Length: 203
Ligand SMILES: O=C([O-])CC(=O)C(=O)O
Ligand SMILES: [Mg+2]
Image (cartoon, rainbow, N blue to C red; front, side, top):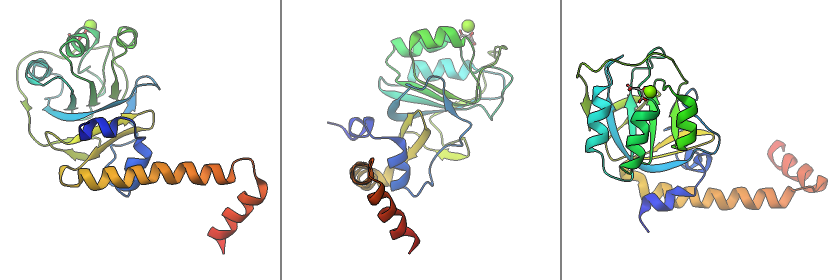
């Protein structure tokens, strides 16, 4: 099993706790559908506002299993992609897309069932003049994302796992999953245990 596969089943909350909450994208980058979930290595895209030709280049160059992470400078007027572009990405094996910007054709994208994390939806398309860069460090949702960083997104948002810390974060996130289960089991439906739990904090 690859380390990316190991991260696939871990809630972003537990990954965040392992990283002291320091590497999460801003909360306005949300999943399009609550069941959207993605884990993969970042293929980064720096897109000029309103010009998405570089997104086509990224889809062509990314490897199956990659997650496209696009810096569209937070623009909420012109869509970075719609159901046509994202359908091509999905068929070529890209696992999902994270955008500091907006998408369109929301009904069609929901039908694709392709995981999309973005700031919302818009009506206008982008032009295709041809500026932009791929595979460079970018800023997305207030975080720096490097090519190859592991990205995990779920109903709660998107988090980035710094490359040098992957193994440690994996171990600590799995420990947190276990801890969450144990503490929930302990107090579940038991008033006395709840009081004991709260008092231990408040003592
Ligand atoms: O063509 C575009 O730039 C955006 C779009 O509507 C699609 O991908 O379906
Ligand atoms: Mg379209």
